[in-house]
Image (cartoon, rainbow, N blue to C red; front, side, top):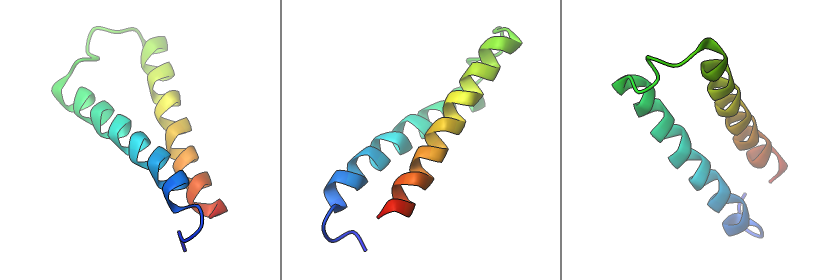
Length: 61
């Protein structure tokens, strides 16, 4: 499956997973408690875009 473009595709997926796990722990720890709803929505939209990017990168390979 990842024979030709494995390293090229898996490296961005790895970096996205690092960002998403960091964001997950930010939410668990409560770093976003004092922020406005607009900031939280922007944060959530960014996470959604990263998840869509993972799906897109896995589908094209």
